Amino acid sequence: MDKWKDIRSTYLYLLLEMQGLTRAPTCSMCTSMMEVKCTDCYGANFFCKSCCLEAHRRSPYHRTFRWTGQHFAPVTLHELGFILYLGHHGTPCPLTYEVRVYMVSVYVLLLRHICRLLRKNAREIESI
Image 1 (tube, rainbow, N blue to C red):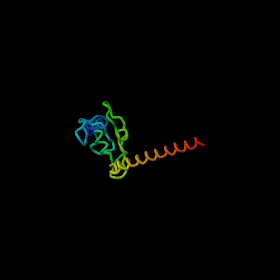
Image 2: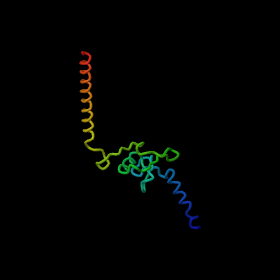
Image 3: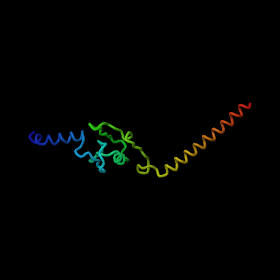
Image 4: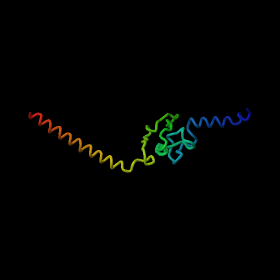
């Protein structure tokens, strides 16, 4: 018990530091100010927003907390702007932009064609 009394303040400080703001509130990956803490990451778990999203590209189910200025409040990765990309090692498909442009173009052309057909059919019905 005497050994515990000697080290209890160290453990208490560590527990409180895990729940509150760290001594050096900077991102573990860069030198920006820390905004987010991840309780599931091992080791360096304080991040700025962009580093947090980068670090969690392959671990989208981690529990994150945002620093409010007073305490850490739960926040989802989605609320931070996380987008889960399937395939390509967590990065967007390099062909996505071309596919989206192509699909939008096809969709617009299809809508225009449907509108023309509806107008044509409406005129034919009116003439009957």
